[in-house]
Structure formats: C-alpha cells, structure tokens
Image (cartoon, rainbow, N blue to C red):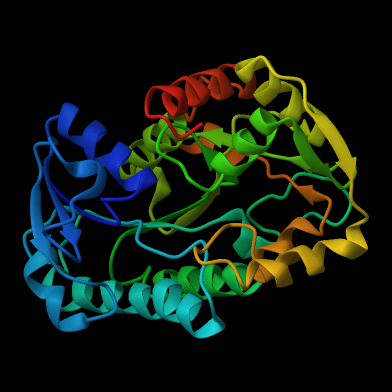
Length: 320
C-alpha cells in the first residue's frame, strides 16, 4: 500500500511516517524544502517537493497514493490570514487534488483538533454530535478545514480525527510547560480540566481509523480516556523532572495580556494572543467512546508514563 503524508516532517507526521514504514507501507512525504527534512532524516520514505498552499504542486504527490494522510497545518501563526492559509486553504487544495487525481483512493484522512469543536461549557466531555463552538482563530480554521473534507464524503472515503492536546518526543508546543517546571515556577490559572493523548496512541488511532470500513465519512474524538486537572499535569511533569515548582496564580482576566506580550517575541510560540483565547476556558475535554466502539481504539499511555518518556527524550536531545 502507498501512503502520502502532508506534514510529515513535523512532530506527529514524522511519528506517523515511521509507524507506517514499520507496517510495510510505501510512504511518500510532501516536503516544502527538500534540503530541510526535519525528523524524516534517516527514515525510509520518499520525499517529494510540494506545498499544500500551492495546488499546482499536489497532483504528482497524490495520484499514486492509496491513502492520503493530511496532517499539515498551523497550530500557531502571526495572523488570522496565516491560520486560514495553513488550515483551510491548504486542506481545500488537498481535497481538490484528491478529487481530480486520485478519485479511487482508499481513504483521505484529515487531522483536525478538539479546538475545532471548542471547549466544554460545563466539564462534560464533548461527543462528536456536539455543535461547533470554536473560540480562537486556530479553532475556527480547523473547523473550516473539517468542513472542506466532510463536504466531499459522498465522493471519496474520508475520515476525520479531532485529538485534544497531543504530547510526546519531538513536540515543541507542550515543551514550554516542561521548561517552566524545570525552572521551578509555573503560571497557574485555576484547576481546569483537560483531555490529553500521547503521540504514539494518536498515530495508532490514525492508522486504525484509516483502514477500518466503519469509519468512512465519520469524525472521531481521541484521548487517553482520562480527564486531567491542572494539578495532575503539573504533578506528572514534576515527577518526570524530579522538580517541584512554585505555582504562581494568574487571574484568568490577565491571560489575554500574556498573549499580547507574546506578539513581540522573535519566535512563534503556543503562548500567543490567539491561543490564549483557548486557554481562558476551563474545560477542554472529549469522549473517545465512539472511536473505541467503531474501530477498537485502545490507548495505552497515561499522563504519568507519557510525561516521563517525553522528559527523557527532551533531556537526551538537550531541549531541557
């Protein structure tokens, strides 16, 4: 079987590429700059030059694929326009390329986000039939990306997964929280509740869902099945780093100011004015029950274990 991955040089995409290769897939990764292979260096995959925001580069990439895994997207950007280009326009281009050049594809898989649905209002884990209510530009553009894929579900087989916060080796978004704990001080804005998912469990869920017949035309939430408080997360990272940090209380009303200050940083970060709109909300929780029922999704890694493995990788690679 032949698989194309967009976003294969990144955190989740590189883990997916490695797993597909181990399972015997012939893997091609769409790469914007062939000189910068990211985490694909040393992985037995074909790299093809292309950019999801440039539709003319996609035809050659998709036409021989049995599976297209569309993971490319932006979790952080400097403007709404950047989010739109990376999460909506890029997805529309991939969908159109598949329709035109690979209409007999076995599956078009799209990686969305819990942010597309938005937070839970009362702490009840969201299910797939909950209405969209994104609260950030990131969430809104992930929602629109989903809609572009779902609109063609009667023409090609599609599957969409909405993970919550994903963490693990190679991740730079959650890295900031490990760095803060190591430095001995963490911001604390109340005891919120979150769903999480370790990257290997996500990758297994992606592959399972793309190959199962009962997932065609469907959207799924994935998580490790637990709900974690802010204290649980800090405790797990603290145990992994063997460091007990000081928690500094920050009123939720101050959170937007933190995002505003980040605008002046030289490097994009998950701590941005847009993503602070997400963090202001207390409940980011989802129910993976449908995935367990439909395609037997069984996560194996809880936060304590995953945080330890992630911290070990960060140490080895001198990220912390």
